[in-house]
Length: 128
Length: 133
Ligand SMILES: Nc1ncnc2c1ncn2[C@@H]1O[C@H](COP(=O)(O)OP(=O)(O)OP(=O)(O)O)[C@@H](O)[C@H]1O
Ligand SMILES: [Mg+2]
Image (spheres, rainbow over the protein chains, first blue to last red):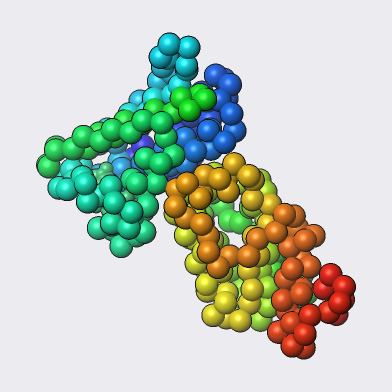
């Protein structure tokens, strides 16, 4: 799914909601996942002029989950450790997005290359 | 652009958020509310978010801003009906909405607001639940 305008976030959130509801993910986990996705989509819009998101249902053993891959071709992040810190922001914001997202999901991975872009992958297990 | 309606009820402004919020809509609500408080001299703002299923850092911040701005304009803000899943998520995200009063439902929120307004006007809390003028 492409997210390049602010309004794209609504159908995007709905898609995740549908996928999560279909696999029987509980409401609290659904809410955490959608909130995390909303933060990452906003970062993509704000710092990288948008990007693409892949929504996948995955499984590991008996556990099902949803994996979201956020890929943009923005400026990249010079210091990931710093960006992951609570309160760090170059956008005069609260700097909660990345660290907060990591707390909300089961697995979190970020890869970035200056001048090339950033890819953030999150997984929320159904019961995780 | 769609708009979130603001209702005036006596000294209170009432907002029921029925649609999915996105950034610009939330920002417009903040601006509209500040303007309405200014124009009407409202003393309280009640925001019903029981239909809202997602609040992320941006929208959380807007709610916080509304509370701060109305405080400056001498009005109190109460947020009612936050879904438990939303409350849990906000805490984990790291945005505990400090400085925003909350209540379980509109009725409780109204009496909380009314109580605060009475307190401000008379300097004491009425003995019942604060519904009386
Ligand atoms: N996709 C991205 N591309 C480039 N830089 C990014 C990207 N995502 C985040 N960043 C950088 O990492 C910093 C931290 O991001 P984070 O989401 O934690 O905070 P924020 O967006 O500044 O504030 P908040 O999310 O609380 O509004 C940002 O200020 C920005 O500099
Ligand atoms: Mg952010």
